[in-house]
Structures are given as C-alpha cells and as structure tokens.
Length: 154
Image 1 (cartoon, rainbow, N blue to C red):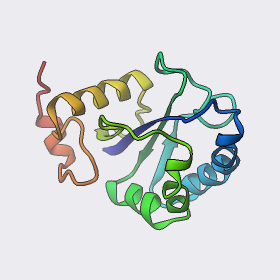
Image 2: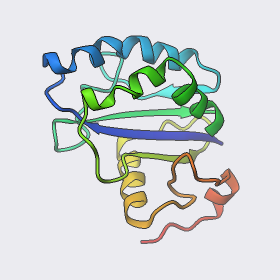
Image 3: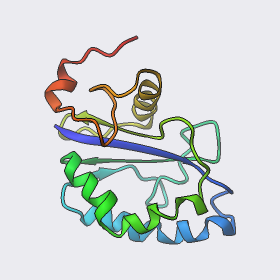
Image 4: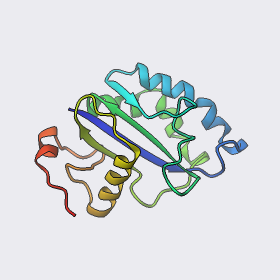
C-alpha cells in the first residue's frame, strides 16, 4: 500500500492577485522537486500542471493539494527536509490560518489515485473523529494493516 495526502489552504487573495504571486511563481519548482523526490508516486494536477485551478470546494479561496507517496517517511522527508520547507515557512504570507484540520493522510492500494471527493471525506472524518487509521496526521503511527482492519464510524 501507499500513503495518500491531502492539504487544503484558504488563500488571502485570488490566485492571480499580486499577494499570491510569489506562491504561484514557486509552484512549478516545488512540484518538480516533489516529483523527483524519493518515494513520490503521483500528484493531483489540473490544466496548469498544478491543482490551484481545480474547484473542489464551494469556497473559491480554498485550494487543494493531493499526492501519493510510497511511505510516510518519504512524504515527511520532502515536506520538512527539502526546499519545500522554505515555502512552508512562508505560508502566512499567502494563506489564512485554518481552524479545522487541513491535512490528512491515509493508506491507498498501490496504483490507486485518490479523488478530491475521497480527500474531502478523509478530512471531514478526521475533523469529526480525530486521528484513526482511516485518516491521520504525521504523528499517527498507523500501519496499512490497521487501515485495512478499521471500520469507519458512521
């Protein structure tokens, strides 16, 4: 099994606003870095080779990022030990503070490309029930077998 991730963010301004320019100008570089990273499998893209134009939520300021990785360790390495961390440190320049959980991890069958609807369901579940094998954060210690055995609450 592989590890899927979703993170969402609410922009401070429309994507084409000068406030967002530095974020937008770094998208191709950071996406290319992800794709070259050890353990990278897949990422959600739209017409612009990123997911910023995809409207997954009714809120036009809410954007989504999704990817699949071979392991939590490979995703963690990319997120916190690559040039991606430079952008992560600057998120307050472009995005509002989120009060709900805005990132979720879950296991998927090898070869499965999760959908935005799937990701929204995992985020909703995480916000309603906390960390479980169905949806968790980096601190979660769940294994694929835990996810297979888990029966999500209704």
